[in-house]
Image (tube, rainbow, N blue to C red; front, side, top):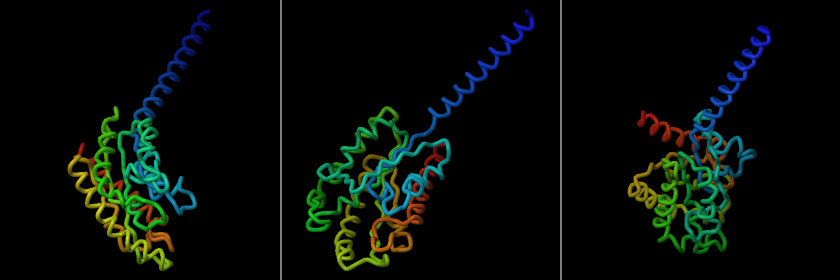
Length: 244
């Protein structure tokens, strides 16, 4: 009888240890800092053989480590403008469902399309609405229960020195590049007005054709996506260190 009681106590003890272990594992998972990367095809990882491994959000996950959970909300051709097609405004329910702690937004490249560039796409016709739409987007995301830290980025550059660009591509990017700089000016003003963090992904990567896909000039190559991840990681790290 005493031996049976001993085995019962041992069994209860082991079950207790397992319960505590599962509880700790669940606690660790729940406490991961959730990072939402919101953007267009450059956030998604276009032109890569395996975006799930080499997109900037995937590489950012490796840099941040296991205490973070990075999710890629990049959609090809995505615009910030409400009147763009497709627009980030249609993606908000998915982003809100994650209730992220950190949100990184990199949009604006596709908003330079219009007035004859990029086929029949129309965005530049509504450029005067860009700043207001960005402010509204930040207000929407700031209201999440997670009270997220928001980082908005100057989009990556259009690099006309990239090898293999044909005359049509060069002509289109020559029109769109100054437009992008105009939008970056608005993004900087929005960051200041809304007191959110700003990440410059434009100037550090400009005139660096070795980081961009040949015959493209807009989408980075694997090394370029790595460079974006490092720039974002350094900005996040600076902010984390500042809060310590």
